Every structure is written in structure tokens, then in C-alpha cells.
Length: 269
Image (cartoon, rainbow, N blue to C red):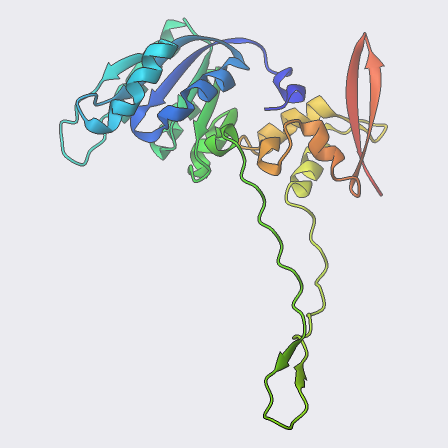
């Protein structure tokens, strides 16, 4: 999440609850760091059946980062009892008042109602999961971070060079026959880049009477519209740089207010 948006959230005491069956052990440091952007991580727990071989990859990272493993046996083959154990603990923590923020690490839609219940209590809740996480769970969170944005990005695929004319092999004594490349169809009107329609909606929610919108307020609006929004999904670490990359649609300016530099955005006519 970019600094422009992090600053709009108050600091929290956060409980990080990890579904060991639906998370990657190699990303544990990045997950804790991401949760730490919003406050102090005071509770660190991971749930799973530690008698099964698939949980072995977690053991070293848990010891290093002081995460408490919670044993949950699978009483029935094919059933995942980790969900219920995590949910029960989350509800206990919610009512105890020892934390005022939650980070649910899973891609399982079974946690949708839990995230909704936490938000209904006025408590901050973030989710961490893969991009295929069902949208209801994503939208139930205040913020949702995709794990694909926590790892190094892949290099963009190289574009193919244009096709050249080729020569068809001719019979002896006949002139060579040149085959022209297939005609390129007329390009259709270019649609707006993927994040631009979302930016327009956020702008309308944050615009002031002078026609400009503060970037931090646009950041809040973006997360109301799509909790899974992340500038890193579009190759930028900061929201300001992502919007600045779309100069055909938006213009930006800065203003010093009380010793702080604020960014403002306006839609171009």
C-alpha cells in the first residue's frame, strides 16, 4: 500500500492469524512486514495440522519470527478444521479487546463472514491472499493485499517483431514469387488503461469545489471501491507515480500545508 494511503489509517495493535493450509511459508516475512505498515503486530498465530508433512516448510520461519503454531487435528478426511479454529480464536480476540486490528492470511472464502463481522464492530481488518481469492472475501476487508505483489515481479513479455515479406520457392526458370504479409487490420479505439475508470470514480468521491481532489482522500475512496487495489499490481510502488503515469487523463500539483506536501489531482478536459 502506498504511503499516501497508509497515512490515512490510524496505528493499530494487530493480530496476524494465518491459515497454514492456504498460505505460503516463504512469504511470512513479507506478510508480517505488510501488516506492520498499519500498526504493531502483537499476536502472531498460524493454524494447521502439524502432524502432516505439508506443514514442515513452516517450522523454521515460525521459530525465526516468533509465530505461535496452533494444532488443529483433521477429525474427518477431506474436511478442513483449520477454518473453525481460526474463526473461534478471532472472535475471542475481538471480544477481549487486546487488539484493534486483524490480518487474516488466507485465500479461502469461508472467512468472508468473519471479516464482515470484524468490520461491523468498527475494527480494522486486512486480508492477504492470492489474486484468485473470491471477491466477497476481498470486499469484506478494509484492505486486501495480493501475495503476487509481495514477490519480485516478472519481466514483461517481449513484443513480436513485425512480419516481413517472404519469398515462395519457385520452379526452375520461373521468377521468384514474393508473398506479401497479411494486411494489419485497422486498430480499434484504444480503451482507457485498466485503473483509469476506477480513478475516475475515486476522483468524483473526493473532488472539492475547485475541481481538484486530494490524493490521500482519493486513496481512501479507492479502498472503499476496491479493497484489493494496489499500485504494485500496475508496476508502481506509489499511488502518486501510478496516476502521474497517466498524463493523458490526469494532471497533478503539490501544495505545502502546515509544513507537509500534499498532492492534488484533477481530471483533464
